[in-house]
Image 1 (tube, helix red, strand yellow):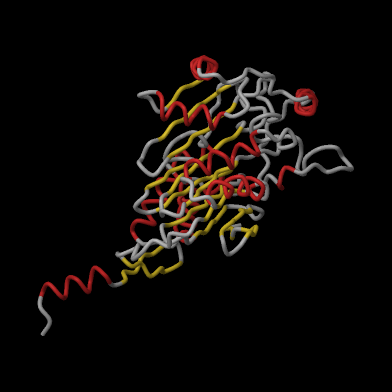
Image 2: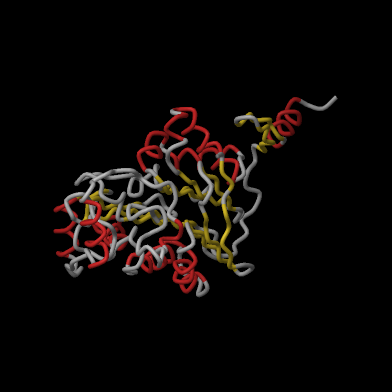
Length: 341
């Protein structure tokens, strides 16, 4: 007969059944047996492919994951054709472009800016908040003063195209968030984004470097034509982004209010700690949103993206259409996430 100690060891290292919705997942309690120690970067949406290239320039040289994600998301922040992030982002209903961003490294250090105006790279201001202040979050005028005091240039973020779209929206001032970003590409025949000019979203990025350490970043200009002062999940540590170097990281995209209500990114990281594969953890997050408000869940889009310490990644979303980009030594590819609806 086996000893009590051996019995307990075999039980803890074995699999436990976890009911997630209608799916029975095999959950090993011992999640991480080894770290792959191969760099990889993943990010939300098709435009994440270009962002990943920027991150890869850091990773391939043996750089830190946190440096990689900062460099990566700066690319869409500076892209005026991307109306959901940084320069050229669609404004709030008062015509002001306000930016939100956060960053987190392998040591639980994190920084965030909210409602930041006039600065092209809010992710870099967020990192400076992380590294130069005793705080985690700076907002509005305070965040702008801090950025200017630390050498950031003040610019006009409202491009001619975004101003035109805002003025067109003012004719009806109808506020209906569109479910999917559709890669932020314009319908050339109609001169607007697929789904309308208020189609809008975010970039979230996760990286693991050659040392097996994690970093994450999330940046956005927020929901198009939002109320002035509105902040979504993107700059909220634990909601739009969370990194735990023992487990992995997660990020979110879509209607931020729904993500905040379930503290989505932190939830998914904790599920991975329990042994959920990344995709299963993301699916559980989506199902929590549905459970809270089934009617609302059918009307909006939320997607989660996650990666664990083995370099395994996965995503899940409410509505069809959420894509994410992956770059490693083995692949450079865009995936389409599975959806509930």
